[in-house]
Image (cartoon, rainbow, N blue to C red):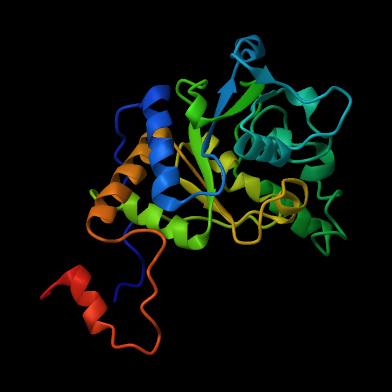
Length: 274
């Protein structure tokens, strides 16, 4: 056995799908995985006026605190198309910094805000902030999110969906079906949106996250939900692989075979004489 893993090669990028393409693929994903909520897209805007010209765009009420996990939940459950600028977001939180709408607030970067809450000491709290994946501040002034079924972000920067672990591993199998690569994901801990939309927007890499306490308390994420964020071409690749797996009899939901049964009969259905 080698002491270290082989490096992951750069991912193969495919053609950029249109909003209409993604609308069809989102419908297929929801059917193949029996998703509970809507797949959606996110797009960053350098000019907020361009964002505000999107058909049917809603914005948070002025003067009320708002988080990006609340934005996401309204989009994926109510089907809203929502746009935000820095002034819509709660001050001294990670939300704006994670998506590049502002620099990291001093109370966060110094560790002051989270010391004695999520971390015992300021050094740990500051290290947490320093290691979070984020979109660089200074370029963007707005972010919009919308269900993929609407086609209003044409195309979005990234596509996202919530799913259970059982649904999520099958999507990853779909990503690997035609051209294999190993996927390495990361865990920030609290402020886990940095692992999903923060990382995917910053790197355009497929990113899986375990939603954090804040996402569950304020965004209403369920106990059994994980979050996938990926560039549009990878989203299409994953759904295409899922279709192929379904034709091979590997479908969701999984038909349970039983922990006390001889697995050979069940495995022969998938592998035949192999």
